[in-house]
Amino acid sequence: MNSQFIQDTPAALVDVVRMQANIDRMQQRMNQLGVRLRPHVKTSKSVEVALRQSRAGAQGVTVSTLKEAQEFFEAGFRDILYAVGIVPSKLDRALSLIRKGCDLKLITDNVAAAQAISAFGQEHGHDFNVWIEVDTDGHRSGVQPESDLLLEVASALSAPGAHVGGVMTHAGASYGFDTPQDLAKIAAQEAAGATKAAQRLREAGFPCPEVSIGSTPTALSYQQLQGVTEVRAGVYVFFDLVMHNIGVCTKEEIALSVLTTVIGHQPEKGWVIVDAGWMAMSRDRGTAQQKHDYGYGQVCDQDGNVLEGYIMVGANQEHGILANAGSPDQDIVSKFPIGTVLRILPNHACATAAQYPDYLALMPDGTTEKWQRFYGW
Image (cartoon, rainbow, N blue to C red; front, side, top):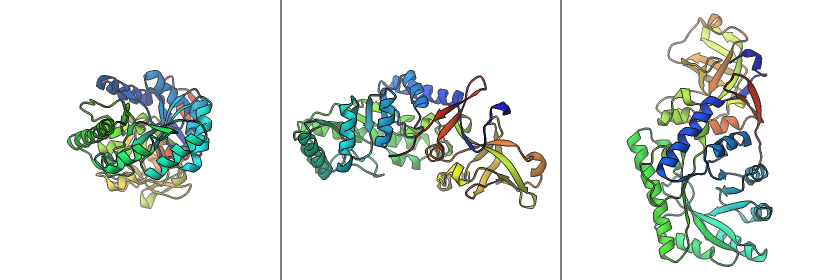
């Protein structure tokens, strides 16, 4: 990377060559499995990134906030799944987007919210497209595929004002595995649970045209997806150290890093001090519970080559502490002179990206562009 293109540090750097390879890899896999890919754009929150996913063949987007839905709709994305349970106080915002032409799908996993959606839709002369969230791994939200509650929610959505558009699930528990065998098992469990829920709805007389599943680890582990219509995945676009520990990417495939500059040393401790602290990296310590702890991030040189053994071992608000975790290195002043620019690979790309208003995109020809990223709910 040419130093003349480096802006003030810290900065969120997107290696576009790596990112495009990640996009192509996931899209090709979904094409082979015969399902749509609906990327979760909460990872990047960037129109520039989502456009590249769309050009590769993705269909629609998944969002985690209504602000994301608004931003991506205004950028030309019409088919949007809002994949967080809707609360009644947000229905007016959702309806406003829909009436502007957004094909917005909502989700719920409880009767109270389903009744509120139906009542609001009936009151305002609209029929909401609502997908029921299914719990296939006990990770977070959703109804059990075999539960009576599934049909109760569907009944509440069948009143004037709403209808069941499908089921969706997220295998978040996949983040706790790190072997191909275990990932394949939970991927199959995810798909089986969602298709079972859809089957029960159809047998009970409720239309259920869409079956939506996904997480990055399971998306890269499915063997077959009979009965599934689409897959959602998000962090694959950048990858991160948590994904590396899980086993679905190499460090060399991680496309997001934080550019930082050496500002000092503590030779007797083997420390290099940089201008990227936890405000730049986030406080996410996701690898601490995994087989390899990378502290606050893996250190790379300016060109993205991994410097094995060197991690960010500590972080204050605006100071990062780098060291060789394997064996303290006191020759750090000559190895990392003041002004040296480094890249730090993040534990969790979504959390690190969230610290920045824009990305510094490193293009294939070595030049850089600024890509906007947005905030808010």
